[in-house]
Amino acid sequence: MRMRMRERERERGAASMDKAQEHCRPPQHSSRHGSGKIISCALAAGFIIVFVVALAVASFFLLRPRDPEIRVVSVHLPRFSSINSTVRMNFAQYAAVRNPNRATFSHYDSWIQILYVGHQVGFMYIPAGEIAGGRTVYMSASFSVDSFPLAAAQVGIFEVESRMRVKGRVRVLMYFTHHIEAAAGC
Image 1 (cartoon, rainbow, N blue to C red):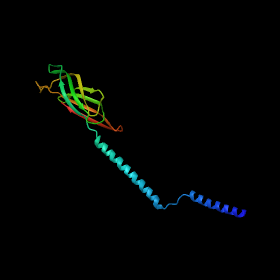
Image 2: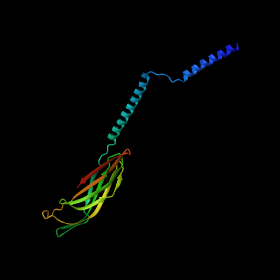
Image 3: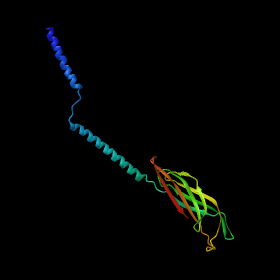
Image 4: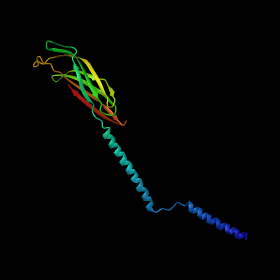
């Protein structure tokens, strides 16, 4: 009797071992299920790529960098003298520079140039600075122009040309830097 009990216990143990081994074996899937996972991963990746590209295009059109707008408000010659067909003067210009971008415009390497009959007679660098998005900054420049001879053909007429150039950069989304430049003449 004890023998039979031992045999039954062995059979039960062997049966439970078979069941345990069945649970430990990795499940066998057909190749159809594996390709479904690959397809769904590819679709998800495709949607993410399309979303990122659409976001980049939309942000470029919404945050597209534009050149600043320069408007010369006034020009003055506080000191002007003409002796023996030679001119000496002080030049003062007041200009408004508007930043139409949403991001801050950092300007550098900007200048004002005075021309008489196509030749430069005065020049001044504009100090570097920043203009907040959508704001207007008023810049004034005043400097002395060295003496220069009047043109013989223009007796009684005195005409000078003022050129202003503002150069700088706008940083969009903190990663993309765009170099922009604007010029105005008077």
